[in-house]
Image (cartoon, rainbow, N blue to C red; front, side):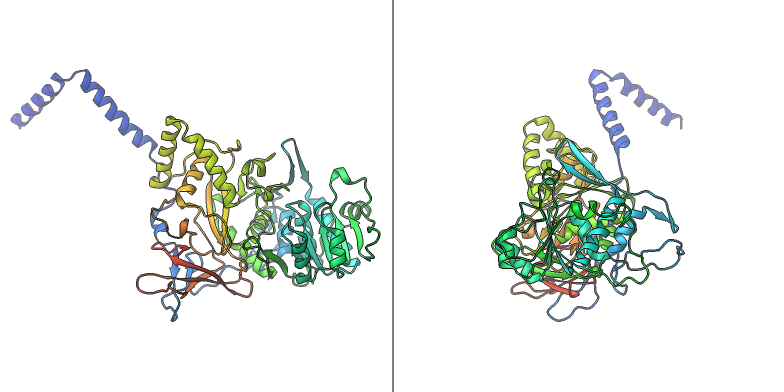
Length: 560
């Protein structure tokens, strides 16, 4: 023992006897590095095992098909998500709620956050952004009154099928809910379309009423080419209210009843329309017709969604957001894509049902520029097109690469995101100065010419904006999305197939099967084929997308 202690003493003495300035510098660097690693270390936002197997395949597959893949949140043997589980006031928290329909979404938006069957009163706001200097807040009670008065007016004039040809606006949403409450069929037309396309969509949908804005709807041409039109409601802006919009142009020979939104609302008694129709005895909500535009020059595909289809899509989107990050009254939701797109519409309905504030910008859907889309508002949740995100990425990454320091810092943040699984705070800013943004939702349109986003671009955008991004695959006959990347999935892949990132697992409202298609076949080496979607969110319960997909090793869906 004495010998051992003597040797230890000699070793320590020898070590400190050779200590000099270089030794101190090396020791300081090592100690600082270890201290930094220990103090800044963070656990990943989600467990890696949850990303390694994101969907569940059926144990048996049919000839010519892959196994049926479902989200881990809706395993085989359990029903797919088709219900909002609406519980009326006073109902026991242990009882099963109703599936709900579109009317329940607006009732929830007006009622506010509920807990244990009691209304707490935390409601969202409805805003309209008019440039950088003016933002209008609409009272929920006023929108309720508009829903009632517009719906009753259309009924009184003999309307049945209502075409909505408007940009993103409060009036579009109010007309949709008016159709739901007053047993009307809503037809949402893509905005800013050529005259022949508008006439074609009106004919195919058999619309008898149109709600639109002056200057965007070719009234004379439509009346001459579509004699079935019986009623027209102009949504007039503030600067044009002094003009007379109720007259039918001379020479048209039309019996169309023309009125304005403002006159219908303002000429009614002050106390009229304040209460929504009673819940008891109400009929099932009518279908909602939309038009899916695939590629330029192709005719739009008309799809009829039942209220149950839309509700299933809304329920799945609410489930897709992590519990700790759920949409709520503290959020400001901005749809920067057209509400005629069912993915954007379903997300907006989900935000309303979650009592989040919703902002509308009429030019947001016409410009692939996030700076224009977010003009005048600072959203926390944003729905954007892939084209807008690619433009933002190109402009922002150019600024990052202009300096060695910013390029190095950006690379460190990307490594922290992709290798450690930790979402860093925003670094270099995007075109806007919004530091509140926490979630961006975007989607690829199956069979369309939508630009695709790679996992590298998505990782850059997450770091640049400080927001998580959920990338979805959408289709004409699917309300909401077919599949969508996980909330905490930040991974980057090399040699990505299909020219873009994966789309995550199917949502809880759908199941996906790949059917043999040409050279793409399923076998022991993997699952490939035409993407076929089934579930309560699908119009007709099943839809083949006409594009080839594959199931990756982590059971996520991607293009083949």
